[in-house]
Length: 567
Image: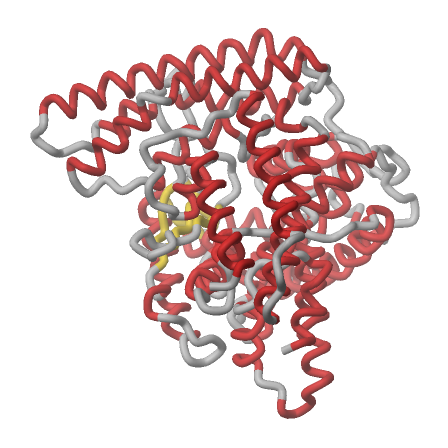
Protein backbone atom coordinates (compact mmCIF):
# COMPACT_ATOMS: atom_id res chain seq x y z
CA UNK A 1 0.00 0.00 0.00
CA UNK A 2 1.38 3.41 -0.95
CA UNK A 3 1.62 6.16 1.62
CA UNK A 4 -1.24 7.95 -0.15
CA UNK A 5 -3.48 4.88 0.06
CA UNK A 6 -2.50 4.36 3.68
CA UNK A 7 -3.58 7.89 4.55
CA UNK A 8 -6.81 7.36 2.59
CA UNK A 9 -7.62 4.32 4.71
CA UNK A 10 -6.82 6.18 7.92
CA UNK A 11 -9.10 9.04 6.84
CA UNK A 12 -11.97 6.58 6.38
CA UNK A 13 -11.33 5.06 9.80
CA UNK A 14 -11.01 8.48 11.41
CA UNK A 15 -14.14 9.77 9.74
CA UNK A 16 -16.05 6.66 10.79
CA UNK A 17 -14.92 7.00 14.40
CA UNK A 18 -15.98 10.64 14.50
CA UNK A 19 -19.16 10.08 12.51
CA UNK A 20 -20.64 6.65 13.28
CA UNK A 21 -23.76 7.36 11.23
CA UNK A 22 -21.51 7.79 8.18
CA UNK A 23 -19.80 4.53 9.12
CA UNK A 24 -23.07 2.61 9.10
CA UNK A 25 -24.25 4.07 5.80
CA UNK A 26 -20.92 3.31 4.14
CA UNK A 27 -20.69 -0.14 5.68
CA UNK A 28 -17.58 0.47 7.79
CA UNK A 29 -17.80 -2.05 10.66
CA UNK A 30 -17.24 -1.41 14.34
CA UNK A 31 -19.31 1.72 14.97
CA UNK A 32 -22.93 0.57 14.74
CA UNK A 33 -23.39 0.81 18.50
CA UNK A 34 -22.69 4.57 18.45
CA UNK A 35 -24.33 7.75 17.18
CA UNK A 36 -22.57 10.83 15.87
CA UNK A 37 -21.84 13.65 18.29
CA UNK A 38 -23.45 16.69 16.67
CA UNK A 39 -22.46 19.25 19.28
CA UNK A 40 -20.53 22.36 18.14
CA UNK A 41 -17.34 21.13 19.81
CA UNK A 42 -17.53 17.84 17.91
CA UNK A 43 -17.98 19.64 14.58
CA UNK A 44 -14.93 21.79 15.35
CA UNK A 45 -12.88 18.73 16.28
CA UNK A 46 -13.74 17.00 13.01
CA UNK A 47 -12.77 20.12 11.07
CA UNK A 48 -9.36 20.26 12.78
CA UNK A 49 -8.89 16.60 11.99
CA UNK A 50 -9.57 17.34 8.30
CA UNK A 51 -7.02 20.17 8.34
CA UNK A 52 -4.46 17.76 9.73
CA UNK A 53 -5.14 15.24 6.97
CA UNK A 54 -4.76 17.93 4.32
CA UNK A 55 -1.43 18.99 5.78
CA UNK A 56 -0.19 15.40 5.81
CA UNK A 57 -1.41 14.85 2.25
CA UNK A 58 0.86 17.65 1.06
CA UNK A 59 3.90 15.81 2.41
CA UNK A 60 3.33 12.43 0.74
CA UNK A 61 5.09 11.16 -2.40
CA UNK A 62 2.87 10.37 -5.40
CA UNK A 63 4.13 7.01 -6.60
CA UNK A 64 1.83 6.28 -9.55
CA UNK A 65 -1.25 7.35 -11.45
CA UNK A 66 -3.59 5.79 -8.90
CA UNK A 67 -1.94 7.90 -6.21
CA UNK A 68 -2.30 11.00 -8.37
CA UNK A 69 -6.05 10.56 -8.71
CA UNK A 70 -6.47 9.64 -5.05
CA UNK A 71 -4.68 12.81 -3.95
CA UNK A 72 -6.84 14.97 -6.21
CA UNK A 73 -10.07 13.44 -4.89
CA UNK A 74 -9.05 13.61 -1.23
CA UNK A 75 -7.87 17.20 -1.44
CA UNK A 76 -11.02 18.40 -3.18
CA UNK A 77 -13.34 16.60 -0.77
CA UNK A 78 -11.52 17.65 2.40
CA UNK A 79 -11.39 21.25 1.24
CA UNK A 80 -15.13 21.11 0.51
CA UNK A 81 -15.87 19.84 4.03
CA UNK A 82 -13.86 22.70 5.49
CA UNK A 83 -15.53 25.30 3.27
CA UNK A 84 -18.92 24.34 4.71
CA UNK A 85 -17.57 24.34 8.26
CA UNK A 86 -15.91 27.72 7.85
CA UNK A 87 -19.25 29.20 6.80
CA UNK A 88 -20.65 27.81 10.09
CA UNK A 89 -23.38 26.06 8.14
CA UNK A 90 -23.24 23.07 10.50
CA UNK A 91 -24.93 25.29 13.08
CA UNK A 92 -28.04 25.49 10.90
CA UNK A 93 -27.92 22.03 9.33
CA UNK A 94 -31.65 21.47 9.16
CA UNK A 95 -33.73 20.59 6.12
CA UNK A 96 -36.68 18.46 5.10
CA UNK A 97 -34.72 15.71 3.33
CA UNK A 98 -31.34 14.81 4.81
CA UNK A 99 -30.07 16.42 8.01
CA UNK A 100 -29.24 15.08 11.49
CA UNK A 101 -32.92 15.14 12.45
CA UNK A 102 -33.55 12.42 9.87
CA UNK A 103 -30.17 10.71 10.10
CA UNK A 104 -30.48 9.83 13.79
CA UNK A 105 -33.64 7.86 12.96
CA UNK A 106 -32.96 6.60 9.43
CA UNK A 107 -29.61 5.02 10.32
CA UNK A 108 -31.50 2.28 12.16
CA UNK A 109 -33.02 1.14 8.84
CA UNK A 110 -29.49 0.23 7.72
CA UNK A 111 -28.71 -2.10 10.64
CA UNK A 112 -28.90 -5.92 10.55
CA UNK A 113 -31.57 -7.59 12.70
CA UNK A 114 -30.80 -11.27 12.20
CA UNK A 115 -30.11 -12.36 15.78
CA UNK A 116 -29.81 -11.29 19.42
CA UNK A 117 -26.28 -9.97 18.85
CA UNK A 118 -27.59 -7.59 16.17
CA UNK A 119 -30.42 -6.42 18.43
CA UNK A 120 -28.00 -5.83 21.31
CA UNK A 121 -26.05 -3.45 19.05
CA UNK A 122 -29.31 -1.74 18.13
CA UNK A 123 -30.19 -1.36 21.81
CA UNK A 124 -26.82 0.28 22.51
CA UNK A 125 -27.35 2.77 19.69
CA UNK A 126 -30.96 3.42 20.69
CA UNK A 127 -29.80 4.38 24.16
CA UNK A 128 -27.73 7.15 22.60
CA UNK A 129 -30.59 8.84 20.72
CA UNK A 130 -31.50 11.29 23.52
CA UNK A 131 -27.86 12.39 23.89
CA UNK A 132 -27.39 12.74 20.13
CA UNK A 133 -30.49 14.92 19.82
CA UNK A 134 -29.33 16.99 22.80
CA UNK A 135 -26.01 17.64 21.01
CA UNK A 136 -27.87 18.57 17.84
CA UNK A 137 -30.05 21.01 19.75
CA UNK A 138 -26.88 22.50 21.27
CA UNK A 139 -25.57 23.13 17.75
CA UNK A 140 -28.83 24.78 16.71
CA UNK A 141 -28.79 26.93 19.85
CA UNK A 142 -25.22 27.99 19.05
CA UNK A 143 -26.45 28.97 15.59
CA UNK A 144 -29.15 31.13 17.13
CA UNK A 145 -26.56 32.79 19.37
CA UNK A 146 -24.23 33.46 16.42
CA UNK A 147 -27.00 34.59 14.09
CA UNK A 148 -26.51 31.56 11.79
CA UNK A 149 -30.19 31.01 11.22
CA UNK A 150 -32.08 28.53 9.03
CA UNK A 151 -35.21 29.13 6.99
CA UNK A 152 -38.40 28.60 8.95
CA UNK A 153 -39.74 26.33 6.19
CA UNK A 154 -36.89 23.86 6.78
CA UNK A 155 -37.26 23.95 10.55
CA UNK A 156 -40.96 23.18 10.39
CA UNK A 157 -40.49 20.48 7.77
CA UNK A 158 -37.85 18.66 9.82
CA UNK A 159 -39.94 19.13 12.96
CA UNK A 160 -42.85 17.41 11.24
CA UNK A 161 -40.63 14.40 10.53
CA UNK A 162 -39.62 14.35 14.20
CA UNK A 163 -43.30 14.51 15.22
CA UNK A 164 -44.16 11.61 12.88
CA UNK A 165 -41.27 9.62 14.33
CA UNK A 166 -42.56 10.32 17.84
CA UNK A 167 -46.07 9.18 16.92
CA UNK A 168 -47.52 12.66 17.33
CA UNK A 169 -48.62 12.82 13.69
CA UNK A 170 -49.28 10.35 10.87
CA UNK A 171 -47.56 9.95 7.54
CA UNK A 172 -49.58 9.21 4.41
CA UNK A 173 -52.07 6.38 4.75
CA UNK A 174 -51.13 5.43 8.32
CA UNK A 175 -52.18 6.04 11.89
CA UNK A 176 -49.89 7.97 14.27
CA UNK A 177 -47.41 5.40 15.59
CA UNK A 178 -44.12 5.88 17.47
CA UNK A 179 -41.56 4.73 14.92
CA UNK A 180 -39.02 3.35 17.41
CA UNK A 181 -41.69 1.31 19.18
CA UNK A 182 -42.76 -0.29 15.91
CA UNK A 183 -39.13 -0.88 15.02
CA UNK A 184 -38.20 -2.78 18.19
CA UNK A 185 -41.43 -4.76 18.01
CA UNK A 186 -39.65 -6.61 15.21
CA UNK A 187 -37.44 -8.34 17.76
CA UNK A 188 -38.48 -12.01 17.67
CA UNK A 189 -35.96 -13.48 20.12
CA UNK A 190 -36.64 -14.95 23.56
CA UNK A 191 -34.23 -12.82 25.63
CA UNK A 192 -36.60 -11.00 27.96
CA UNK A 193 -33.88 -8.73 29.31
CA UNK A 194 -32.89 -7.64 25.80
CA UNK A 195 -36.52 -7.06 24.87
CA UNK A 196 -37.01 -4.90 27.94
CA UNK A 197 -33.86 -2.95 27.10
CA UNK A 198 -35.06 -2.39 23.54
CA UNK A 199 -38.48 -1.24 24.67
CA UNK A 200 -37.08 1.14 27.27
CA UNK A 201 -34.56 2.66 24.87
CA UNK A 202 -37.23 2.98 22.15
CA UNK A 203 -39.50 4.82 24.59
CA UNK A 204 -36.66 7.18 25.53
CA UNK A 205 -35.84 7.81 21.84
CA UNK A 206 -39.50 8.50 21.13
CA UNK A 207 -39.69 11.00 23.98
CA UNK A 208 -36.50 12.70 22.78
CA UNK A 209 -37.91 13.12 19.29
CA UNK A 210 -41.16 14.50 20.72
CA UNK A 211 -39.21 17.04 22.79
CA UNK A 212 -37.12 18.01 19.75
CA UNK A 213 -40.24 18.50 17.62
CA UNK A 214 -41.77 20.76 20.29
CA UNK A 215 -38.58 22.83 20.65
CA UNK A 216 -38.17 23.17 16.89
CA UNK A 217 -41.77 24.25 16.39
CA UNK A 218 -41.47 26.78 19.17
CA UNK A 219 -38.08 28.28 19.99
CA UNK A 220 -36.25 27.33 16.80
CA UNK A 221 -39.04 28.29 14.40
CA UNK A 222 -39.42 31.62 16.19
CA UNK A 223 -35.71 32.34 15.70
CA UNK A 224 -35.64 31.17 12.07
CA UNK A 225 -35.88 33.51 9.09
CA UNK A 226 -38.59 33.79 6.46
CA UNK A 227 -36.09 34.08 3.61
CA UNK A 228 -35.66 30.74 1.81
CA UNK A 229 -32.81 31.62 -0.55
CA UNK A 230 -29.21 31.50 0.63
CA UNK A 231 -27.68 34.04 -1.77
CA UNK A 232 -24.87 33.79 -4.30
CA UNK A 233 -21.89 33.21 -1.99
CA UNK A 234 -23.34 30.29 -0.03
CA UNK A 235 -24.90 28.91 -3.20
CA UNK A 236 -21.60 28.77 -5.07
CA UNK A 237 -19.91 27.08 -2.10
CA UNK A 238 -22.63 24.45 -1.77
CA UNK A 239 -22.83 23.88 -5.53
CA UNK A 240 -19.12 23.08 -5.51
CA UNK A 241 -19.56 20.71 -2.56
CA UNK A 242 -22.24 18.81 -4.43
CA UNK A 243 -20.71 18.89 -7.92
CA UNK A 244 -16.97 19.04 -7.39
CA UNK A 245 -16.58 21.99 -9.72
CA UNK A 246 -17.21 25.73 -9.85
CA UNK A 247 -20.62 26.53 -11.33
CA UNK A 248 -21.41 29.68 -13.30
CA UNK A 249 -24.97 30.22 -12.05
CA UNK A 250 -26.00 32.60 -14.83
CA UNK A 251 -24.73 30.37 -17.67
CA UNK A 252 -26.27 27.30 -16.04
CA UNK A 253 -29.57 29.12 -15.54
CA UNK A 254 -29.78 30.05 -19.24
CA UNK A 255 -28.79 26.54 -20.34
CA UNK A 256 -31.45 25.04 -18.06
CA UNK A 257 -34.20 27.04 -19.75
CA UNK A 258 -33.12 25.91 -23.22
CA UNK A 259 -32.84 22.26 -22.17
CA UNK A 260 -36.26 22.31 -20.52
CA UNK A 261 -37.89 23.79 -23.63
CA UNK A 262 -36.46 21.01 -25.81
CA UNK A 263 -37.70 18.32 -23.42
CA UNK A 264 -41.14 19.93 -23.17
CA UNK A 265 -41.61 19.88 -26.94
CA UNK A 266 -40.85 16.17 -27.00
CA UNK A 267 -43.32 15.65 -24.13
CA UNK A 268 -45.99 17.42 -26.16
CA UNK A 269 -45.38 15.06 -29.07
CA UNK A 270 -45.52 12.06 -26.75
CA UNK A 271 -48.82 13.15 -25.18
CA UNK A 272 -50.32 13.60 -28.65
CA UNK A 273 -49.32 10.02 -29.54
CA UNK A 274 -50.85 8.75 -26.32
CA UNK A 275 -54.29 10.31 -26.46
CA UNK A 276 -54.31 12.81 -29.32
CA UNK A 277 -54.81 16.53 -28.82
CA UNK A 278 -54.04 16.62 -25.10
CA UNK A 279 -51.32 18.31 -23.09
CA UNK A 280 -48.71 16.27 -21.21
CA UNK A 281 -50.45 17.22 -17.96
CA UNK A 282 -53.79 15.95 -19.26
CA UNK A 283 -52.08 12.76 -20.42
CA UNK A 284 -50.63 12.36 -16.93
CA UNK A 285 -54.09 12.66 -15.37
CA UNK A 286 -55.42 9.94 -17.67
CA UNK A 287 -52.50 7.65 -16.91
CA UNK A 288 -52.95 8.18 -13.18
CA UNK A 289 -56.56 7.05 -13.53
CA UNK A 290 -55.71 4.01 -15.67
CA UNK A 291 -55.36 0.73 -13.68
CA UNK A 292 -52.94 -0.55 -16.33
CA UNK A 293 -50.44 2.16 -15.37
CA UNK A 294 -50.93 2.38 -11.62
CA UNK A 295 -50.28 0.00 -8.73
CA UNK A 296 -52.40 -0.03 -5.60
CA UNK A 297 -50.62 -0.78 -2.36
CA UNK A 298 -47.04 -0.15 -1.26
CA UNK A 299 -46.01 -3.80 -1.05
CA UNK A 300 -47.25 -4.58 -4.55
CA UNK A 301 -45.35 -1.55 -5.85
CA UNK A 302 -42.20 -2.67 -4.05
CA UNK A 303 -42.50 -6.20 -5.46
CA UNK A 304 -42.91 -4.86 -9.00
CA UNK A 305 -39.84 -2.65 -8.61
CA UNK A 306 -37.86 -5.67 -7.43
CA UNK A 307 -38.87 -7.49 -10.63
CA UNK A 308 -37.79 -4.49 -12.71
CA UNK A 309 -34.41 -4.40 -10.96
CA UNK A 310 -33.78 -8.13 -11.28
CA UNK A 311 -34.79 -8.19 -14.93
CA UNK A 312 -32.63 -5.24 -15.93
CA UNK A 313 -29.64 -6.63 -14.03
CA UNK A 314 -29.91 -9.96 -15.85
CA UNK A 315 -30.30 -8.42 -19.31
CA UNK A 316 -27.49 -5.88 -18.90
CA UNK A 317 -24.86 -8.20 -17.44
CA UNK A 318 -22.42 -9.04 -20.23
CA UNK A 319 -24.12 -6.77 -22.76
CA UNK A 320 -23.68 -3.14 -21.78
CA UNK A 321 -21.82 -3.81 -18.51
CA UNK A 322 -19.88 -6.57 -16.78
CA UNK A 323 -21.52 -6.83 -13.36
CA UNK A 324 -19.53 -8.56 -10.58
CA UNK A 325 -21.36 -11.38 -8.80
CA UNK A 326 -21.53 -9.55 -5.47
CA UNK A 327 -23.51 -6.76 -7.17
CA UNK A 328 -26.20 -8.94 -8.71
CA UNK A 329 -28.43 -8.42 -5.69
CA UNK A 330 -30.14 -5.06 -5.19
CA UNK A 331 -33.10 -4.95 -2.81
CA UNK A 332 -36.20 -2.81 -3.31
CA UNK A 333 -37.37 -1.46 0.06
CA UNK A 334 -40.10 0.77 1.48
CA UNK A 335 -38.78 4.01 2.99
CA UNK A 336 -39.49 4.67 6.69
CA UNK A 337 -42.50 6.75 7.68
CA UNK A 338 -42.05 10.50 7.43
CA UNK A 339 -39.43 10.33 4.66
CA UNK A 340 -39.47 12.92 1.88
CA UNK A 341 -41.32 12.05 -1.33
CA UNK A 342 -38.22 11.34 -3.43
CA UNK A 343 -37.01 7.73 -3.87
CA UNK A 344 -33.37 7.08 -2.98
CA UNK A 345 -30.58 4.49 -2.96
CA UNK A 346 -28.19 3.28 -0.28
CA UNK A 347 -24.91 1.64 -1.26
CA UNK A 348 -23.71 -1.81 -0.16
CA UNK A 349 -21.36 -2.23 2.76
CA UNK A 350 -17.63 -2.60 2.20
CA UNK A 351 -17.85 -6.40 2.23
CA UNK A 352 -21.26 -6.56 0.47
CA UNK A 353 -22.81 -8.33 3.46
CA UNK A 354 -25.42 -5.59 3.22
CA UNK A 355 -26.56 -5.23 -0.40
CA UNK A 356 -27.38 -2.09 -2.29
CA UNK A 357 -30.97 -0.99 -1.69
CA UNK A 358 -33.51 1.25 -3.38
CA UNK A 359 -36.13 2.94 -1.20
CA UNK A 360 -39.69 3.79 -2.22
CA UNK A 361 -41.38 6.51 -0.11
CA UNK A 362 -45.01 5.85 0.75
CA UNK A 363 -46.69 9.21 0.28
CA UNK A 364 -49.90 7.80 -1.21
CA UNK A 365 -51.69 4.47 -1.58
CA UNK A 366 -51.45 4.53 -5.38
CA UNK A 367 -48.16 4.37 -7.27
CA UNK A 368 -47.47 5.61 -10.79
CA UNK A 369 -46.10 2.62 -12.69
CA UNK A 370 -45.63 4.65 -15.88
CA UNK A 371 -43.42 7.11 -13.98
CA UNK A 372 -41.57 4.78 -11.60
CA UNK A 373 -39.95 2.70 -14.34
CA UNK A 374 -37.52 5.44 -15.32
CA UNK A 375 -36.94 6.34 -11.67
CA UNK A 376 -35.84 2.79 -10.87
CA UNK A 377 -33.43 2.68 -13.78
CA UNK A 378 -31.97 5.79 -12.13
CA UNK A 379 -31.82 4.33 -8.63
CA UNK A 380 -30.87 0.71 -9.36
CA UNK A 381 -29.52 -0.63 -12.68
CA UNK A 382 -27.94 0.90 -14.69
CA UNK A 383 -27.94 3.89 -12.33
CA UNK A 384 -26.78 4.28 -8.75
CA UNK A 385 -26.43 0.60 -7.93
CA UNK A 386 -24.13 -0.09 -10.86
CA UNK A 387 -21.93 2.90 -10.16
CA UNK A 388 -21.73 2.83 -6.38
CA UNK A 389 -21.61 -0.94 -6.14
CA UNK A 390 -18.86 -1.21 -8.77
CA UNK A 391 -16.77 1.39 -6.96
CA UNK A 392 -16.77 -0.87 -3.88
CA UNK A 393 -15.18 -3.67 -5.95
CA UNK A 394 -12.22 -1.55 -7.13
CA UNK A 395 -9.93 -2.37 -4.22
CA UNK A 396 -6.76 -2.44 -6.33
CA UNK A 397 -7.12 0.83 -8.21
CA UNK A 398 -9.11 3.07 -5.89
CA UNK A 399 -8.17 4.08 -2.37
CA UNK A 400 -10.55 3.28 0.44
CA UNK A 401 -11.45 6.98 0.62
CA UNK A 402 -12.47 7.00 -3.04
CA UNK A 403 -14.59 3.89 -2.56
CA UNK A 404 -16.54 5.68 0.19
CA UNK A 405 -17.09 9.11 -1.34
CA UNK A 406 -20.15 10.22 -3.29
CA UNK A 407 -20.10 13.46 -5.27
CA UNK A 408 -23.64 14.29 -6.32
CA UNK A 409 -22.72 15.88 -9.64
CA UNK A 410 -20.90 12.73 -10.65
CA UNK A 411 -23.28 10.17 -9.16
CA UNK A 412 -26.58 11.86 -9.96
CA UNK A 413 -25.24 12.81 -13.37
CA UNK A 414 -24.42 9.16 -14.04
CA UNK A 415 -27.86 8.03 -12.86
CA UNK A 416 -29.56 10.54 -15.17
CA UNK A 417 -27.27 9.41 -17.98
CA UNK A 418 -28.47 5.87 -17.16
CA UNK A 419 -32.08 6.92 -17.74
CA UNK A 420 -31.09 8.46 -21.08
CA UNK A 421 -29.21 5.28 -21.99
CA UNK A 422 -32.40 3.28 -21.42
CA UNK A 423 -34.22 5.64 -23.75
CA UNK A 424 -31.49 5.28 -26.38
CA UNK A 425 -31.73 1.49 -26.10
CA UNK A 426 -35.50 1.49 -26.62
CA UNK A 427 -36.64 0.60 -23.11
CA UNK A 428 -39.36 3.27 -23.21
CA UNK A 429 -40.99 1.94 -26.35
CA UNK A 430 -44.51 2.51 -24.99
CA UNK A 431 -45.67 6.11 -25.05
CA UNK A 432 -46.74 5.95 -21.38
CA UNK A 433 -43.29 4.98 -20.09
CA UNK A 434 -41.66 7.40 -22.53
CA UNK A 435 -43.75 10.18 -20.99
CA UNK A 436 -42.60 9.03 -17.57
CA UNK A 437 -38.96 9.19 -18.68
CA UNK A 438 -39.45 12.62 -20.24
CA UNK A 439 -41.20 13.91 -17.13
CA UNK A 440 -38.15 12.91 -15.11
CA UNK A 441 -35.88 14.65 -17.58
CA UNK A 442 -38.12 17.72 -17.33
CA UNK A 443 -38.11 17.49 -13.54
CA UNK A 444 -34.31 17.63 -13.48
CA UNK A 445 -34.15 20.45 -16.03
CA UNK A 446 -36.77 22.40 -14.08
CA UNK A 447 -34.65 21.90 -10.97
CA UNK A 448 -31.83 23.85 -12.60
CA UNK A 449 -33.85 26.99 -13.18
CA UNK A 450 -35.87 26.69 -9.97
CA UNK A 451 -32.93 26.03 -7.67
CA UNK A 452 -30.74 28.80 -9.05
CA UNK A 453 -33.69 31.16 -9.38
CA UNK A 454 -34.98 30.66 -5.85
CA UNK A 455 -31.62 30.89 -4.09
CA UNK A 456 -30.27 33.81 -6.09
CA UNK A 457 -33.58 35.70 -6.22
CA UNK A 458 -33.67 35.75 -10.02
CA UNK A 459 -36.55 36.75 -12.24
CA UNK A 460 -38.05 34.38 -14.78
CA UNK A 461 -36.90 35.71 -18.17
CA UNK A 462 -39.56 37.49 -20.21
CA UNK A 463 -38.30 35.81 -23.39
CA UNK A 464 -38.45 32.15 -22.36
CA UNK A 465 -39.91 29.75 -24.91
CA UNK A 466 -43.73 30.12 -24.84
CA UNK A 467 -44.08 26.35 -24.62
CA UNK A 468 -42.85 26.61 -21.02
CA UNK A 469 -45.78 28.82 -19.99
CA UNK A 470 -48.53 26.55 -21.30
CA UNK A 471 -50.79 25.11 -18.60
CA UNK A 472 -49.45 27.16 -15.69
CA UNK A 473 -51.87 28.73 -13.25
CA UNK A 474 -50.48 32.17 -14.11
CA UNK A 475 -47.91 33.54 -16.53
CA UNK A 476 -44.69 33.81 -14.47
CA UNK A 477 -42.56 35.66 -17.03
CA UNK A 478 -40.82 38.65 -15.51
CA UNK A 479 -41.69 37.65 -11.94
CA UNK A 480 -39.11 36.79 -9.29
CA UNK A 481 -39.18 33.13 -8.27
CA UNK A 482 -41.00 32.19 -5.09
CA UNK A 483 -42.15 28.86 -3.65
CA UNK A 484 -45.70 29.15 -5.01
CA UNK A 485 -44.54 29.81 -8.56
CA UNK A 486 -42.00 27.00 -8.27
CA UNK A 487 -44.54 24.44 -7.05
CA UNK A 488 -46.94 25.15 -9.91
CA UNK A 489 -44.12 25.24 -12.45
CA UNK A 490 -42.74 21.89 -11.27
CA UNK A 491 -46.18 20.31 -11.13
CA UNK A 492 -47.02 21.24 -14.72
CA UNK A 493 -43.62 21.08 -16.42
CA UNK A 494 -42.40 17.98 -14.55
CA UNK A 495 -45.79 16.19 -14.44
CA UNK A 496 -45.66 15.81 -10.66
CA UNK A 497 -48.45 15.36 -8.17
CA UNK A 498 -49.13 18.40 -5.97
CA UNK A 499 -47.76 16.54 -2.91
CA UNK A 500 -44.55 15.56 -4.70
CA UNK A 501 -44.06 19.04 -6.15
CA UNK A 502 -44.48 20.63 -2.71
CA UNK A 503 -42.01 18.16 -1.17
CA UNK A 504 -39.51 18.78 -3.97
CA UNK A 505 -39.55 22.56 -3.63
CA UNK A 506 -39.01 22.30 0.13
CA UNK A 507 -36.12 19.95 -0.62
CA UNK A 508 -34.44 22.36 -3.07
CA UNK A 509 -34.75 25.23 -0.66
CA UNK A 510 -33.07 23.19 2.07
CA UNK A 511 -30.19 21.82 -0.03
CA UNK A 512 -28.92 24.72 -2.17
CA UNK A 513 -26.88 23.57 -5.16
CA UNK A 514 -27.84 19.90 -4.94
CA UNK A 515 -30.83 19.94 -7.28
CA UNK A 516 -28.81 21.16 -10.27
CA UNK A 517 -26.31 18.28 -10.01
CA UNK A 518 -28.42 15.84 -12.01
CA UNK A 519 -28.57 17.79 -15.24
CA UNK A 520 -25.19 19.47 -14.84
CA UNK A 521 -23.62 16.07 -14.21
CA UNK A 522 -25.46 14.39 -17.09
CA UNK A 523 -24.17 17.11 -19.41
CA UNK A 524 -20.58 16.23 -18.46
CA UNK A 525 -21.13 12.48 -18.81
CA UNK A 526 -22.64 12.91 -22.27
CA UNK A 527 -19.83 15.21 -23.33
CA UNK A 528 -17.24 12.71 -22.11
CA UNK A 529 -18.90 9.89 -24.05
CA UNK A 530 -19.07 12.05 -27.16
CA UNK A 531 -15.35 12.79 -26.81
CA UNK A 532 -14.59 9.07 -26.60
CA UNK A 533 -16.79 8.25 -29.59
CA UNK A 534 -15.14 10.94 -31.69
CA UNK A 535 -11.68 9.69 -30.76
CA UNK A 536 -12.43 5.99 -31.37
CA UNK A 537 -14.69 6.27 -34.39
CA UNK A 538 -16.21 2.97 -35.51
CA UNK A 539 -14.11 1.06 -32.97
CA UNK A 540 -15.92 2.69 -30.02
CA UNK A 541 -16.99 -0.01 -27.55
CA UNK A 542 -19.84 1.20 -25.32
CA UNK A 543 -19.49 -1.56 -22.72
CA UNK A 544 -15.73 -1.04 -22.43
CA UNK A 545 -16.25 2.71 -22.03
CA UNK A 546 -18.86 2.16 -19.36
CA UNK A 547 -16.56 -0.08 -17.34
CA UNK A 548 -13.61 2.31 -17.64
CA UNK A 549 -15.84 5.19 -16.58
CA UNK A 550 -17.26 3.35 -13.56
CA UNK A 551 -13.76 2.29 -12.48
CA UNK A 552 -12.85 5.96 -11.94
CA UNK A 553 -15.01 6.20 -8.85
CA UNK A 554 -16.74 9.40 -7.84
CA UNK A 555 -14.59 12.29 -9.05
CA UNK A 556 -15.61 15.93 -9.22
CA UNK A 557 -17.00 17.22 -12.49
CA UNK A 558 -13.98 19.50 -12.83
CA UNK A 559 -11.80 16.46 -13.54
CA UNK A 560 -14.29 13.93 -14.96
CA UNK A 561 -13.75 14.58 -18.67
CA UNK A 562 -10.00 14.99 -18.20
CA UNK A 563 -9.75 11.63 -16.43
CA UNK A 564 -11.95 9.84 -18.95
CA UNK A 565 -9.79 11.20 -21.76
CA UNK A 566 -6.80 9.45 -20.18
CA UNK A 567 -8.25 5.95 -20.58
